[in-house]
Length: 412
Image (cartoon, rainbow, N blue to C red; front, side):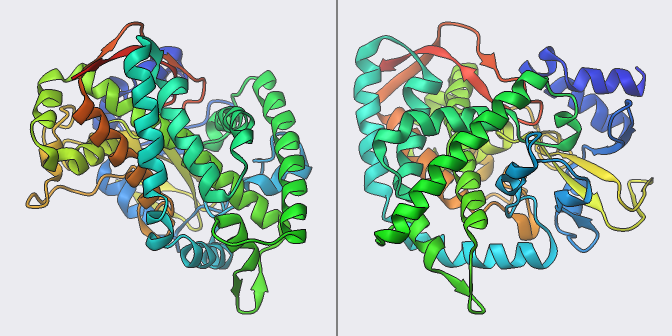
């Protein structure tokens, strides 16, 4: 297949539904594949060790998207929305990460555990009596949106708008290569949503400054200082948007993907129900096997060789986390759902679902806590999950985002 053919395959509908055979072939045939399909020249990396090595070398591979340009939904006034920890590099990333680490402490996250347990129990009560449901909107998203609104201190009555915003902006996020191919209608929908979301948060922050309170991330972001300097309003807005996306879209997909794996691997699912000690390993194995974020990008700061391929300074590097997480050199029988590989006494490689190095996902403890609670409750209260329709997927090749999955949860 030609390089253009490979690019078209990576952006196809069939790939979004089942990317694994193509990624496995590309990993075997082209550890690093240069693509320049009339859009943005890019270098695609598929192997576990190469990806992990790049993620842990920020002095050579930067996450600063300003090096490429774009990331503003077609509206320069909205560029700040994407000017966050993920897309920052160097000193700016270190400053934002330091602030994030100060406020996003384990003790802060843990105090929301009772609220997560309550909403999971409520949604399961409803789902077990409802018959056929959409696992995305009726179950998983209800849990994650309730959680992230509580963490940020947003009104619960705004949950529907928040869910709508994050779903739209999720379509407009991801590796720059794919954004260049996006339907203009999707970009326009993202631009309008960005304006609506900015207006909402600007008014909300003004009200919070007039009526300060404690106990949520917005309050902490407004109060925290590093070297006597506080976050600007644009920085608070971009951090809030990042947490809304990461705390909603990706965790929603993680919960749904666990349920889909239970359906696809019934023997493993039954084994999980008989051994509560496998709850945490099951979440880690879901993160490895069906991670929500398929690829992320970096920018080479100097000429560098990766697996024998020269990447020039300024080159866009697309890291296929999904391919790395199924690399047989790192994970034996990589396509098998095997939670036991993450038991404490096993020496399994760390998966790449949350990245690696200085950009390791700040919200990983929150995503893990939410999903572990949901998984534990599902395993205790159901005897299985029955998919009643094929899944529907979003149009963004950077995400494993199921937008609709009709199913029945079968009461134990």
